Structure formats: C-alpha cells, structure tokens
Image (cartoon, rainbow, N blue to C red):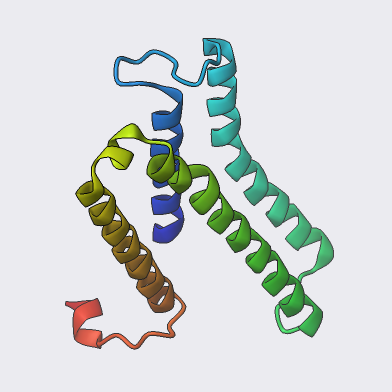
Length: 144
C-alpha cells in the first residue's frame, strides 16, 4: 500500500508540474474546465478500478490457487508495470531530460540528474524486492 501511495503522489506532482507553471497559469494550454475535469477523472479512476476489481472478484469466485488465475494475474501485472515504465520513461522523464533548456546548457546538471535517476530507480527496485519478500531483511530492523 505504501508503494501505491508513493507512486500516486509522484504522478500527481508530475501532472501538476506539467499543467501549471510557477505563477499558477496553465502551462499546457488547457482551459480551467478541462484541467478540473482531468484532475477529477484522475482522482476517480483508482477507486472505480478498486470497486470493479471487488465486483469481479465476488462474481467470478476468484481462486488464487488455480493456475489460470495465476497466469492472468501475472499477465495483468506485467501489462500494468509495462505501462508504468513507458509513462515514466517516455512521457515524464524524457520531457525533463531532453526538452529542457537548462539541462541542455549545463552538462554537470545533466550528469547529476542521470545519477539521481539511477539511484532512485535502484532504490525503488530494492523496495519492490523487499515488499515481495525476495530480499531478506533482519527482524531487528523491521521490529525496532
């Protein structure tokens, strides 16, 4: 749940950065009504997906020991992670790294940004391994 909340917060910050400039004027060229509609839809889609999943779970009688269910869960997980990787690399990071005048003018800043991006990706990978209990963690750290 913690990873889910962190991901949502990062995406919200990035969407807000893309929509608004520093003086709170719309940067993307959308009207305020369109921007409000997009923000509303972004905040509503997650609860709608949770409700849809709960309904499908109760209607179909999901059995997590069934091999077909495990295959479907793996396919849906890989599709959602692929969409997240695409959004991160193409829509979010590429804009900041390749279409930013400050980044193109300062080579030191660009190198530092790539190092920070790599360290952030590595730390999120370690967090994912820990969340799936693949990475062993001492009980003293977790309890203390």
